[in-house]
Length: 188
Image 1 (cartoon, helix red, strand yellow):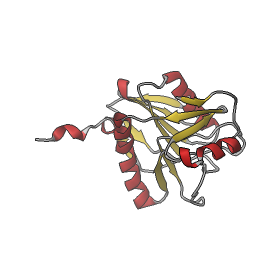
Image 2: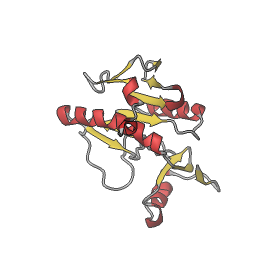
Image 3: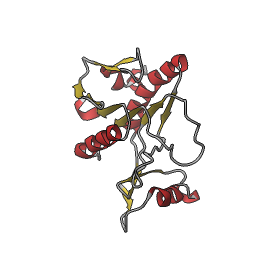
Image 4: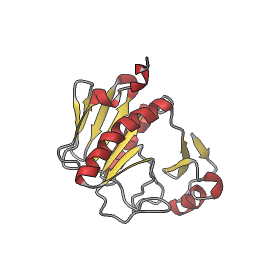
């Protein structure tokens, strides 16, 4: 949902707006100069958590940082700061305490919400790869698939497949069916 359409913003202008006290609790991104607000659903958060948990366990054992809803920017791009739903970095970089991380993550995960256009989500995945992200997982709940993007390949995985961390997360695997698991229905 776009919140500012009067003009296109630079990263510097956007950071001042996003860090203003009245916006600190909002998930704002800058996409091609336009300020956009992310409004995740409970379903969206569940699937993000289903990915975050195993990645967090991996990072605890092998190193790196796994975070949710953190802004990143490619230094050469003055009109974009993006917020993957879940991301992984090697942890070699300084921990950022304000504003966007001044580099892209190694892994970016995006989960499609009902109001997201699939075409725009795919454009976002390709943007990540073009700006240094080595592995992107695009989760599409209504089809129960995950599209995988790398600098050399794009593929579609269904619930019979498993996500593979490749060179980014050596040894990491996660069954696609586990991404869509909802344990909330088990109450007696």
